[in-house]
Amino acid sequence: MSIFTLALIKTTKQKANFLLVLLFPIPLLLIPENGNGFNTGLGTYGLLNMFTAFLLCRPLVEDRMRGVLLRIAAAPIHYLKYAAGHLSAYLLVLCIQIALFMAGTILIRDYQPVQYFQLSILYLAFSFMSTAFAVAWNSLFTSYSLSFALFSGFGSLLALISGVSIPLMFIPEGLQLYTRFLPPYWLPYGIDAIYRHNLSGLVLSVMILCGYAAVMLLAGTKRRL
Amino acid sequence: VNILKKSSSFTQPEVMYAVVLVMEFTILLLLIIPFDAAYIAVFLFVLFSLLLRWRVSLSSASMVIDALVVSISAFLVPEAALFLFVYVLYFAYHEHYFLLLIPFTISLLLLESGHIILPIQAALAGFLLSRWRSENRRLHEENDQLRQKVYRMEQTELKLLTDHREIDRLSRLNERREIAQKLHDNLGHEITASNLLVKAGRELLKREEYDKTLSTLDQANQRLDSAASKLQTAVSQIEPSDETGIETVLNLFRQFIYPVDVSIDGNMSRVPVFGQQLLHIVVQEALTNIARHAEPSYVKVHLNNTGRLLRMSVENDGVTPEHGNTGGANGLRYMRRRIEAVNGSLTIQKTSGRFKIIVLIPGVSHE
Image (cartoon, rainbow over all chains, first blue to last red; front, side):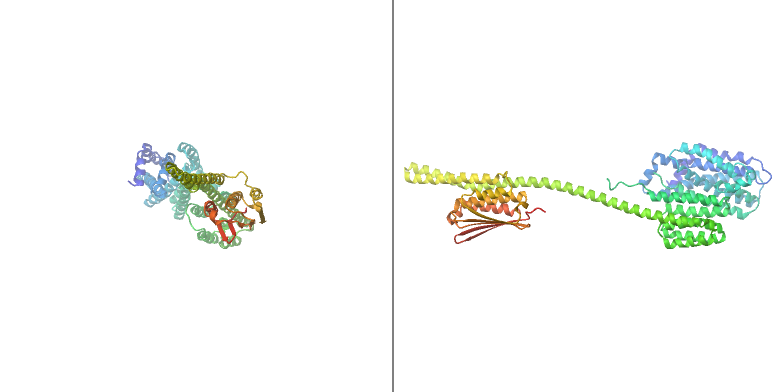
């Protein structure tokens, strides 16, 4: 059994993950449009995506707490393979969530087909960033409970000021100049770019999200035994 | 265990380097507020290149590619030149002073005069940190060498102690062997001869040959006297002398039954204890031989300590070959063995009317 399969099985054993992937996106689909953009649920999905990624990464922290990493260090398995196997499993789960969410959007909304594709790309980049962020965040803690408790507050605040929880138009222009530095900002920015058919804006947001993901992965996947 | 004990994974200069980087980044971010997308892209690229070098073991010279990418982007977006200080700091810290010139020069060309302080400050900080790191590394190496030296000395001490115990055991065994040999060589022969003579005397007494019996018993008596004398000699040779000073040796000459002409060259007080003891035994044996087997008109002794060699010659003119071939031979043999055990030598010169012993004992002076 590969590490990827093992990580996938461990993920499916958590009942909460099914709720996060199958149930929680549904209410977001029902949030009405604000008249000057897509429906607000598309942005709010970013918050759900962040928390899903965080909860999915739980086995990585628990493995470190239980000393599994120490055994892996002694086994003929490279840590990168272990990390890549887990992260790709979590990304797959997030991809399923995105696919289901997009399928629901297609059913309920009537946007242009290319916009669904662009949204999927943007969500994929955001999922990549969310997973990397969760890994980097968790690498700072040895207790998952503490990590989750702090993330609940910090993540919500981050989502709020970055325009994920509420539409970007409600964030003051002056504040936006500062919140651009935060990774979640680039999801609503990208959604807005898609709505306005601004392809360069979308590419920029996807690139910056991927850049953040790469940086946080490098910082977060440092082996800590 | 001390050698294997690892120091912390980050040394002080490395921590300080990270602190300086964070501080410079903070200053930079304060300078570029509000953030533009281009800034963020360059910032992410710089952060990525630094983290990549931290995570992956790449040549520090490879950073020049990243520096060139940011330099080129600085020509498109001049403010990106602000980030070049990171590469200045990096190259200065890693002592690539030639490569440092690329980001440093471009920074000076593109930056506003108010911001020029950033690369200069980074170059200075990097240089000082690199010096600190070199010094730290040197001290660590010295520390390691000292630990290794201590470890080797501990091992040597342990080995010497083991050797010392082994030598002590061997010397005791050797001493016992010598005692056994001495008793066998000196006393065994005399006592066996006496025993045979007594038995012969008994047989002669049975035959009532009284003259022959008397003669045989006289011989047995002589043999027993000789055995008693040899036993005393052996005991005195085996028993270590309480007085080991060179004065004790000289006392032997003074107390000798014949006058002894002693001449000394060199500093005899520098002869170590084992040398003095050996000298004492040799002199004692030589004088005993003279007293027992010769009737000399003169005895000349010459002692010479050259520093590397102790030479002693004992000469007399009263040699009597008849006696010299019996008891004296054993004493000389014993003396020779003692001397040869310390890589010395014993030479006997026997000419008409003159008997001379020359003893050489090497390495007897203190360092």
